[in-house]
Figure 1: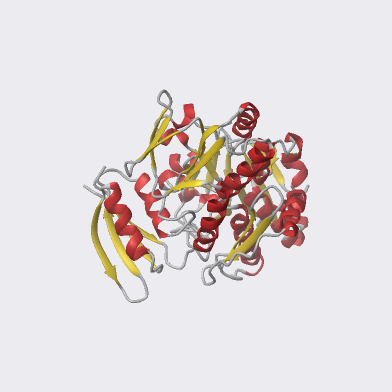
Figure 2 (figure 1 turned 90 degrees about the horizontal axis):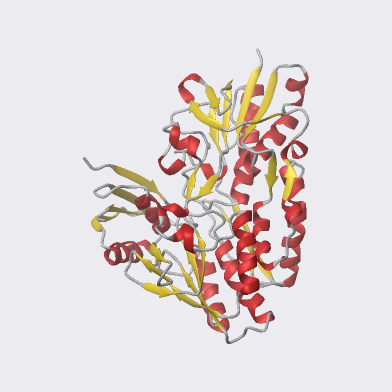
Length: 379
Length: 76
């Protein structure tokens, strides 16, 4: 009997799982004993980390997108349709078109979405760079910016944990390069009592911010934005004035997760080692979608996807488990327009950033191009 | 009736126990409780300090040897 594998989501995690599985299960697929279907809500695949460069005019739109069909192996069926309900009890997924998809194994890779509406005034008054329209709008605002107070506001939870740091450092350098030294002030706000969740990075940031004159306000969880007074205030009772407000809005998971009753705020309760949805034996969860308390980042999705590929392929072929996910996360961190650093960590090894170098910056730029090999399952 | 959820943030380095607590409270309603498990010694200070600063209620804090457990009730 044919084993039907259904993957919801055509982002990084879903695409790597699909392309990885098609290679592992080549024999079964050729014999008609297995099939792989990706159910995605868009025909386009976006390289999300590239959005960081858009506000500075350093990325072209066409570099960020490819047709998902061209990224997926031809042996994978791609259906562009939005999943509207996941029926785990009956191994079935319903889609917006009215079609339904039965599966033997399900991989949920529906990702996260921006939820600025959770904070009053944030949508109307703040810029953001976590989607293309927002990044382009911020690019226009930076072209018009002649000086003043910039608040760079970070909210929890959010994906790509180092992007706010990169934005702060790149923005500072970008504005100085434009001859605005002494005419602007950046204040970076962060939800907890230090500058970043990653303690070594937070420690590194303190002298770096001092050297650049970047101010900070920790323990700042946004309560509301007043667009008339041009102020942002926190649940902790602090108020900051701004001329330009840039936010990393809070995130939530996909609507289909909430509509299916599978998890609060769209995060699916997931075993941190097996990556199985709690209470199931045939539903895997990868990437931002999980409720695992680790970074929501592309590398997390990649390493989780690798684990799911190995386990799912072996379950189909031999009915046994291969290995657990070890919590591995890897981050490149741009520390300016021309330098970068990197770090990795897992469930047992804490992160230790290396000193920033130009070489790492170049390597990150190279990875921006190599990403497509990664999504194709070749890297 | 209030709900209680547990966030097991032991041996996680990013985003860490306090960020997970903040995210969990965002998804909760007033009166709900969140239990956070943390192996980060920094949690002894920063979780109670933040809870006080915002005005939520620290119901309990417990040293369990290899980790700490905090229960916080959402107050507003």
